[in-house]
Length: 218
Image (cartoon, rainbow, N blue to C red; front, side, top):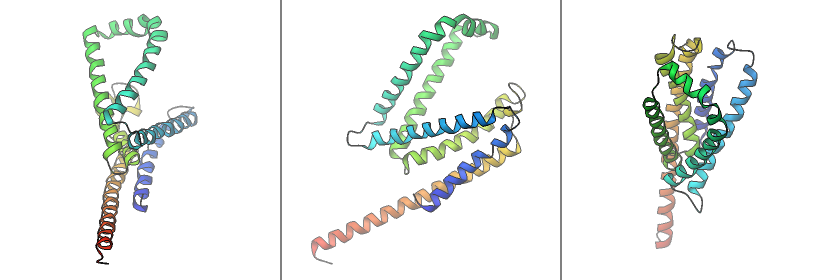
């Protein structure tokens, strides 16, 4: 990565950190929550790198193969959870709340089905980005930051003054975070494009020199 790519990664990270200002007064366990988020983000980022590696290694997987394997593992873990926890607590945690909310079985199935389709599209797009987009895992992580700040806008439209507290509403710090992250993502994209163009240009020059040497022109 070039210096400009690193600089814009730092800008994106700093923009996301700006939202911590709104979280300070939300509870007494902010430090504990922040620690969990840091560790979880590091582990999540590691899956980016590992996913990219298995699709670019000697015995590489295709985008669909990687999506199927990871989806199967996740579904298996969820299935175990459903068997040992959800089913024994089905009435109190699912059936009674559904009746109170007026949610029918068909409507619940549509919601879960839509959620599943959205996850499939998201996963295929994500793995395609890791494999084909310049920068791979790093680029995917940077764009994930953009996704995070756009959630602020949707949350404000859907949930502000309807569900939860002030954390659901847009704020000055969230606006600054949105603008900062957006600027960092655009800057990273431009820097990545320039870095890729430079690598291609150098590669073309080396190829030309090799041809000239082979033909005795140099």
